[in-house]
Figure 1: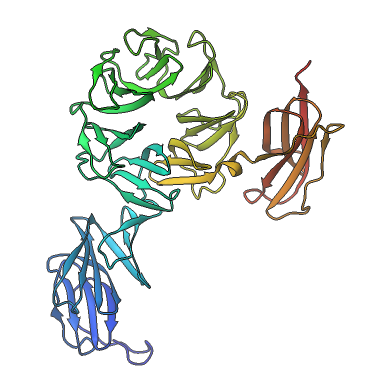
Figure 2 (figure 1 turned 90 degrees about the horizontal axis):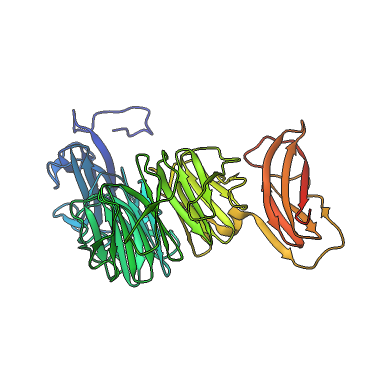
Length: 496
């Protein structure tokens, strides 16, 4: 204890104890102790007495009026958040448990507490209920959308739900006996979660879950077509449900691990592991034929029209004839380990062990889209929802970026100009962003590139087919050194 602004100190008790936190209310001084709970002194630390929560490590304390909050837990004994309304005389659990808490703060009616593993929680009713603020730092292997509800399947902490585009997340795990979630699917009003211990079904937006078969199988993938739901298992092939996941029938490919599924019209494609490639069924799994890519591990499949894309450990492959032939489409890929694919309009997004990539020309070229990631993550899952692109990452939670921002190209006028033109960027000079406008007289394959003062190519902003009109694209140079002086716009006439 110091009485002269820290110039001199004297012992204030609790010798040989790890004191993690202190709070003061009038003459009451509370200390959070390792293993021994909360201690109270009413004489400036001369004497101390136990004040509850014995045999738990109290890592944080906070006061709000007459309410005293304590966060507990350590690596040998996960704890929770407790509330006392009589200055430590009695304590009750707030219901937030099975975590290690190291910080609590109070702001008005909001109580925030930080979990060692799972991020930040908030309560607006004195700890009566809690919700995740942001998202816990978990590996997110699956994402799914139902109306305005975004579901995230995590590897170890079950399913989380956000109804406001990821601002706030709540865990929705009641009845979910396995929290290692590898896949999610929406079928009608039903939500399906594939785990390491089979499938689980919820009919009330994750409020409750019941087992839905496969208790002895890992569910790697789902695909939905009308009332038909296909499930890919670990070594037991494909199963089919015709009633939104309530009952299941075997649908072929026994003995194979089905890592991914996609549906294109009446065709069902199944991606397998360990060198079996892609399989195709045209009769709801009654019969399957091999559709190529032997000796590849198929991590993910996606389809649009007649084009089927496969993400592998050797990059992206494309087939436009139902697997009859495959071509490698890896120009510009910074990683060959493709773990997720999602398609919207002519935009193809790939999640890899080096972040997110985008192609606008069926994979002929790829653009890096990692701006705004604090650390470039491994991207296991991708989702389009409410004008955002969501990325489920390995150990870095869920990230989002607006669809307009990540595509970065605006078609601002469809009036056909008299000539092809690239305008001066504005503002110029700029820090860190600038706008570039250009005009196309005819439909062309267009490539817009940025160069530094030495003539080195540093960024490709556009690489796709575009119709006549005026376009606008934004360039963000915050990740680069200063000295960008030129842009180059190339068009290749499609009539040639």
